[in-house]
Amino acid sequence: MTMVLFTSVAIVREKERGNLELMINTPIKTPELMLGKISPYILIGLIQLVLVLGLGWYFFQVPIRGSLLHVLAAALVFIAATQFQAMQMAFFFFLPSILISSFMFPFDGMPAAAQNIAEFLPLTHFNRLIRGIVLRGADITSMLDELLALAIFTAVAFTLAILRFSKRLD
Image (cartoon, rainbow, N blue to C red; front, side, top):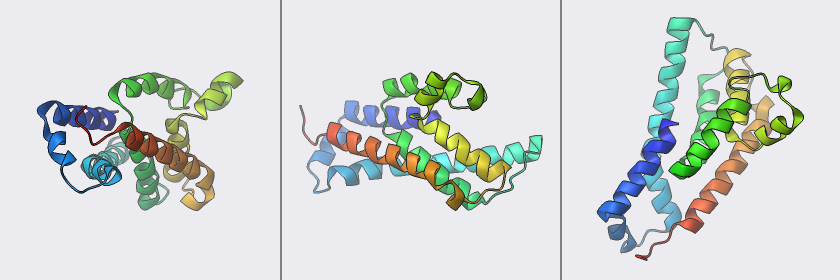
């Protein structure tokens, strides 16, 4: 959640201060600009993940049975997908994501309608990946369907971000 908020606030702040106007005159393309703006936040997100996993292991003895590299790969796709959501949309997605993604409640215990909605939330697939890799020691290649779902979310979100962003002063 912090990653989406940090990115959204940073981009809006740069727009308000006029820094994005300077970018309009540069020869870089919109996808390059978007990637350049979110890359530091993706790195911060990966560092946060390692810290949280480390603290969970140290203080609560949460086992990490799978590969940390696989966790980082799954997180990279998840972080990249959520970075492009605007702050308002982030709040719109946070509550349902937390409630119906199996983060708080068992997925199988939810009504079918809630399960169907949850399949369209990136956090649902990320939770499955993290639980599979960290708790069961699963290999990321055995969870390609979850990784593919996150990759689709990433592609859609990145495409929408590029389409919504314009290098004009209107």
